[in-house]
Image 1 (cartoon, rainbow, N blue to C red):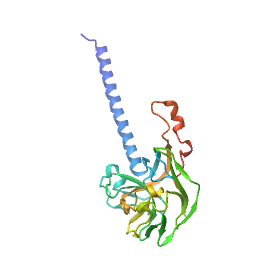
Image 2 (cartoon, rainbow, N blue to C red; image 1 turned 90 degrees about the vertical axis):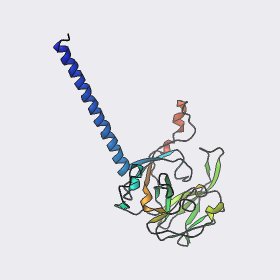
Image 3 (cartoon, rainbow, N blue to C red; image 1 turned 120 degrees about the vertical axis):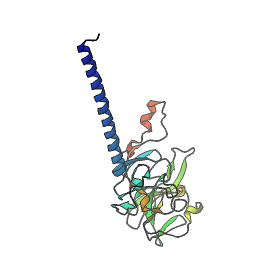
Image 4 (cartoon, helix red, strand yellow; image 1 turned 90 degrees about the horizontal axis):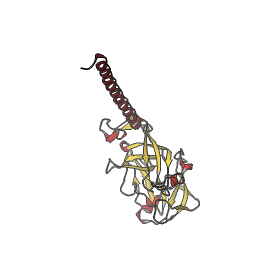
Length: 257
């Protein structure tokens, strides 16, 4: 027969275990709730998987997007839950902003591009030059640009500094001024509450010139703000001594312009 002291001790142990288990569940629930709030209303991390935004953003960049910059829509919420109708607390993007948005033809897919056309604008590309409201944007030559990461063979580009009508300057890449249909397009008129977006790697970007089309303001997820981590393809997971060299240290915490 067990003594009263032993039974009391055992009972106390079981009670402490249950309390600790419940406390841990509460902590996990609170942590998940806080993470969801931050992700839905403040910051959301994204990784750059393709080269359409070179040289501004590189494959292997990890960045934070501010969710509050343009207000909130259903796409601010995890899974695109249709809780928010249209867009609330809306602030219009500026020309030149780098934005994350949901692909209009497949809202489960995120894209990142630069806004070059605002509602009512006439947008056209002729011989590689961007025209906004029938005026060519200013463009000056920079040094040649080479992409030698995440590609089988090095790729060589012409690099330019492009200036938009509001004075916003950024670098763009071109292979040539006669690259397929992207360098000579029809004239697009941007509808109300929509935007025209382009990648900075002009000849290697699927954007509003091709299948993306106009981006409704409801599809905006947020503004690309800064890079918090970046790596190239020179390191190997099974070789830890290569990890340090694979990190692009100079890109970490860089703002996105």
